[in-house]
Length: 256
Image (cartoon, rainbow, N blue to C red; front, side, top):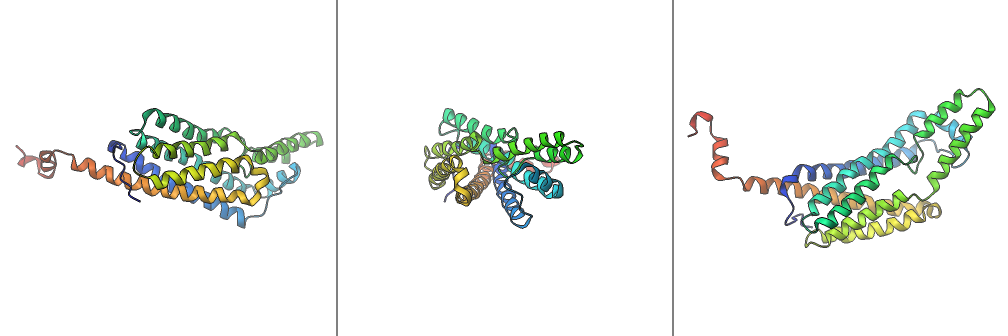
């Protein structure tokens, strides 16, 4: 696939590169989280008391897992911002809408109390549960843990917005003549993702199919942004006035 994107503003080449690196790091963190999930002790799927005791016994690994699911949200904000800027010449209004929806959908992940695999709030509840001296106090923290467990299993509006962001960015790509393969794959990924988010409680491991599509789309997007950044840098250099390049290469005492 050619990475050339006619009309893209080369002055944003640093953002394109940041977006490319962020896409790669996000995939790496997600994969690392899956590896940790596979090799670590399996957390209970129900029972607030059992979950609090599990978190207390596996505190470090539990916190690590939650951070591995959360940090990519920040990275993906950079990816979608870079895409919106790179594609803005195709339709400024559409790019603004797609950029706001996609960036905001990942930003609000930090406000949602669960990650889909747990919650950092569970660590606080676990500490308070361990320090509680009465059965009544412990029951309150167990009830809080039950709520977080339930929220992990409930389809979140955030997940649907994230898939919508992918679709909007991909539709924006289709307005141009470049990146069309990536655009159609993004539409597929976003569409499958929307259905997967809506049916997450009943899909089980089948939900992983959306995860695979998302990983492939992010890797493809990362390569496209990286090559776009390289082309933008090359284009910026080729547009410098010839006298400017010559003067920069000469010592100051040899310049007129």
